[in-house]
Amino acid sequence: MEKSAKVASKAKRFHGRLLSRAFLEAAPEQVAPRLLGKVLAHRTRNGILAGRIVETEAYLGPHNDPPDPAAHTYRGPTPRNRVIFGPAGHAYVYAIYGRYFCMNITCEPDGIAGCVLLRALEPLAAPGSAEFAAMALNRGLQPGAPPSQLTSGPSRLCQALGLSRPAHNGIDLLDPASPLQVRDDGFIVSEMLVTARIGIKHAVDWPLRFVLPEHKCVSGPKRLTGSRVLLL
Image (tube, rainbow, N blue to C red; front, side, top):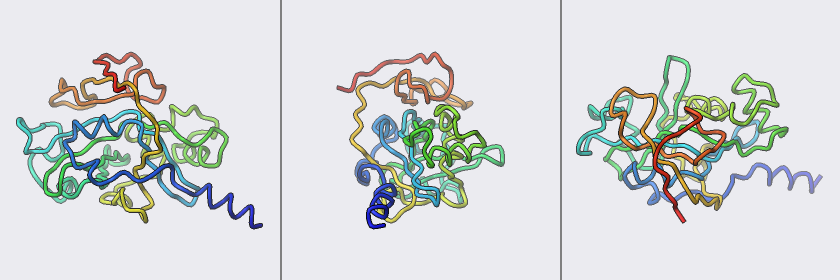
């Protein structure tokens, strides 16, 4: 019994270590590529549902010159977007189509708006595990579904991890007691692809989308075009 309890306790631990607040208190276009390879983890009654960040998009605040017309903060603070104007390291979750959710991580110092949209994750749970099955069930898929179908898209990853605006908007991702955290497990990113953002109508040519090249869980077109950047 004692050995089983230790195994169960270990299985419930988050991956790696929490990011620091300072890591996220920078401009979105700087934070977005830094988040590649980091881990988003959600402690649930079905275990820790986690994924490695493989695709991000930066959205700039109204202080930017020029302001970002695709950002939710373009016209200034509102009850809907006030989280983005707060401290770095909080979840900004918004609804789309009245039934799906997308999640951003706030950045910049307190009072200055800026955030990074998480566009895709790689599930960290092994296929066949209880956590993988829980993520598939959250998506309405069979337990043996391909990993790319679980978290390749901003609304898909929220479904898979069980995230929603009512439950998670405004949550501090850097609080050790938080059920939803962003962490660093030591994964090294050696190369990234910088492309224009997708799925928006304004500032569509701004190169603010950051991707792990040729990763099977990346959202959008199979053939990505952009600039490859070596990081090592």
